[in-house]
Image (cartoon, rainbow over all chains, first blue to last red; front, side, top):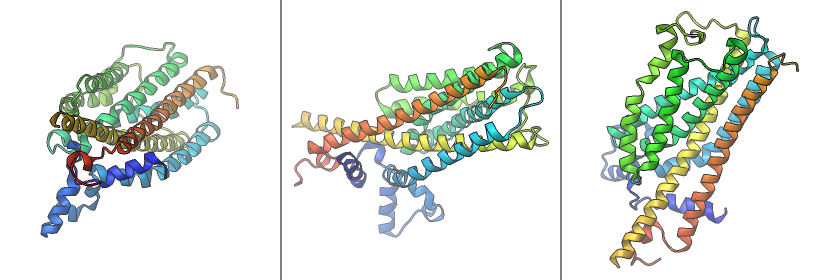
Length: 289
Length: 59
């Protein structure tokens, strides 16, 4: 094990110390165990024990290689299906292959904001340190997937609609989602104190969640150039199985990719906050001396 | 494989998606190495969470 990895491990083991965001479930739970008063939630939901930065780091170290492997395999199968198994569409021809990246990217762009909204509740209601980390690290990923959705949609629109862009409700509401992601990232960068930034970002995230149903139902509420929902709809998917199956495999691959990148980014953010805490406390100690 | 008359749009879409995914992956890896390096550097200088909290404690 090289020095850097050793440092991470050592840092992870010093749980009794006080990186402000490290105060979490594990220490409290251990104390409760020693008193014989283990919280019921810990007994009922062992997984919640992993909602602690140190345990999360240990879990990530074990799980990440498997996630990377699963993502690579899913993309291999998905791309094979998308290019060599799925037939061309009877109307759109070969351009339908853009759908295999456009639709999963759109789903992830929205799913990411949903995850951030749940994390925002975790930050504001329970003040959970990992919720804050999850929210912050999901934003760039959500922005990236929404960007892919917009660009691939534009490249799909040009040959099918005759234009790269039109200000219809679906396209505009997704563009708003992308701008909200950028705004959230900018908000994080303008505040030095992660706690204050986290609370402000959580409020903004919850307010921005209003846009999710607007995106989803925009094609129903308004007359749009964008087609109506064809997978997640009442009455079931309207796409033929020969195209739907590759689409769902690609959606799974993108979701695995998101989980992998998010876990890795959360690990990085936890380490970044440890570095920041150490530097701050070192500076405080130097001032006191 | 023949992608038809609109091949350029299909290829461009997949290239953009690949570039974004690769950028995210490289960013995550570089960031991880940077944070590990910073932590290792702090530990080499004797600054750990334990030593900072109890500066007088024996190593």
